[in-house]
Length: 109
Image (cartoon, rainbow, N blue to C red; front, side, top):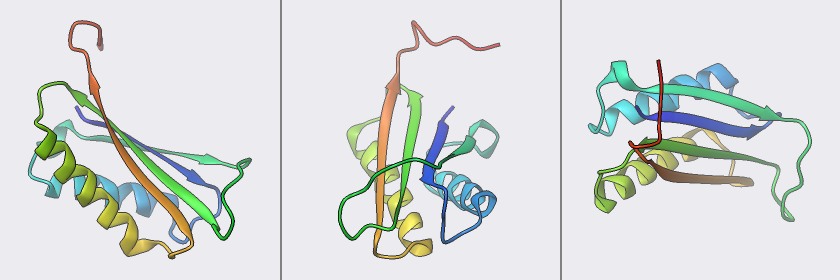
């Protein structure tokens, strides 16, 4: 864990795999996770509507096991948003949200 899902408009200013690589690396550089535990993927949207003056969007959703402090989650959120700002135009809508996963419910094999 964490699971990182990058939702984005189809027309990105960066190649999707490069974006996945950069976000994956930025997550590791947060010093909160071992590299082998990070899982990152991207989903492109063809149909969407944005506010006036916005050319596209990128939203990062991070799911991680409950137990991290608000400060750690804030640090990760700010670090990932900073990563996005490096590669995107000002006219892009950029956002990050951190979600806690309930260990009693989450399952994997």
